[in-house]
Amino acid sequence: MPRELLSTLLFLWVGAISSLAQTPVGPPSPPPQTPSQAIETGQKLFEQRRYLEAERLFQESLGMLAPDDPRRPGTLRMVGAAMRLQGRFADAAAPLNERLKLEPDSESAIEDLAVAYMGSGEPAKALALYEQLVALKQKQLEERQGPTKRGVDEMPLIPALQKLARAQEFALQPKVALVTLNRIMTIRSKSQGSDHIDLAPEFLNLGRLYLALKNDEMAAASFQFALEILEKTYGLEDSRLLPAIDRLAQSWRNLKRADDAEMLYRRALALREATYGGLHPDIAQTLDALGKMLFDQKRYSEAEPLYRRSLGIWALGLGPRHVLLALSLDNLAVTVAALGKFDEADQLYKQALAIRDFDDVGSLRNLAVIAQARAKPKEVETYLRRALSTIDASPEKSDALTPVLKDLAEALRKQNKNVEAAKLDQRRQELKKVTPAEQK
Image 1 (cartoon, one colour):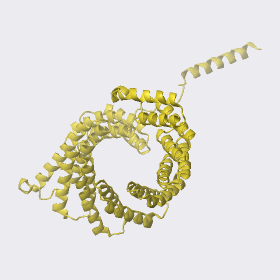
Image 2: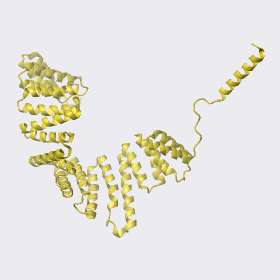
Image 3: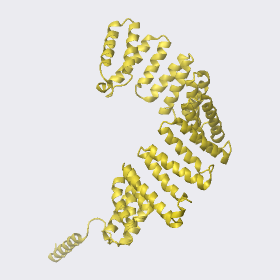
Image 4: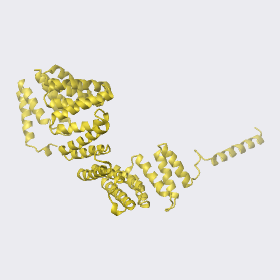
């Protein structure tokens, strides 16, 4: 090769290497953004639900904003919102707290921080903020109306009071929430009248709180008031009555007012059939509730067709392997067993057990009972042995251990397996000497 050509090639090769060394690897770095550009880009990412990327840009803009920049509170709010939407409620509290310090009289700043505290499992801090929100709204009312007119129209307080009541309930303070809710209802009654439609959901909430306090009488009265308001507003055959009907039926059932409860369950069933047709899951739930009440009254022949219909709805809607279908099979099985249809009960319990994909102790005991009624002692023994093995394999001892030991011992004695039965009796006697805490 001529020396001149070789020199030219070496020069070009060295120049190419030098050029490659100066070329950056990977995509070029984005140009520095101004705070406004970072905020604008972050908002676009936030709208696209790219919350982590948006958060980084908002944080970047905060680093460029002066402490007194008017854009700072809004950016802090967006940082907190992006964190909350990622499920990071505890992290969101820090920027939202900083924002509240900058805007102490901002209702949204108070609410946003309260939501973060609720999500992070700090209801006491959230309660203090909601109380602060109510006080702020009260102050604003007094400034507009004057102190002498306090209480003339407190309707603007209701949204804040509702949030406070929910927080109190979440913090397991139902008695305190009851006071707040009664205040809401007093305000509504004074401003809107005692039968205004907006009072219906408040009465439903009031009833729920009374149920939590084990006061069935007051719960029933609250649900009754809600139903009467809804009936007056919408008539007697509107589906919007259903929440009140369902809750009142349950309350009357708790109070042993079986006839009244049955009437409401049948009314709810007719309303749902008229509204949804015949195969809606809400209809199945109503059939189950009515069937359970009739079963408890030993009206087995009336409960049976309800459970059969419910089972058909669940089977069509849930498919053949859903846990709710297993529960529905159990309901029908115990009902037909009570009617002496033991062969069918046996098949239904077996279907339910197969759906669960594990040895459920309750199902096995039910199958043992049915096998006993069908005079099949070997099957009784098999099911009870499986139940005992399941209990023994569990890390926590079941309350069913003692009755399973007793039933299995009796089943073995009927087959003259007295030695093994005696061992089970001895084990059961030893359990009686152990405290429940020691058993665990």
